[in-house]
Amino acid sequence: MAENRFMVDHMLGRLGRWMRILGYDAEYVSTGCEDDKVIELAAKRDAILVTRDSMLARRFHGSFLVRSTDIDEQIREFTSSFPPDLTLMMTRCTQCNGLLEHRNKSDLKGRLETGTWNSYEEFLVCSSCGRIYWKGPHYRNIIKKLRGILKLDEDTL
Image (cartoon, rainbow, N blue to C red; front, top):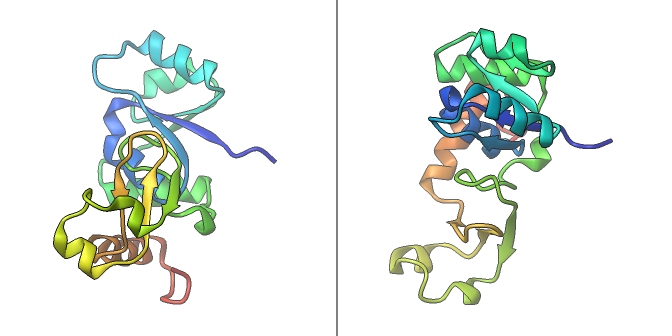
């Protein structure tokens, strides 16, 4: 079965980032993109449009209307309708939605701060934009937040 694709409008940039953390294919449409263009892009990509704009949601069959303005509640709303596959978590770049690839530390020589280089052994790199990820304090905070929002026990993540 094919993975769902999502198009996240400019009103939900933070949710789009959290969707990508959870492993969803979630492309972001930036501010200034007209509704007709958003609809065209979502249709072309065969994506579910994720929006807070009820008029836009009515215009595009295959929209998911997010009601809350609170990011934690938005994550709960979205994941209750589209349960995450937690094996896909941290497989997408939070910036560009590209796929993350494991890289040898030696491949990243000169691209990391000394403290990061000395403290971590496992790295992921975005195949599209080259952004580097590792499981540092920020990663642990993300896991803690998701456990609370999704009501997961410590063994799950």
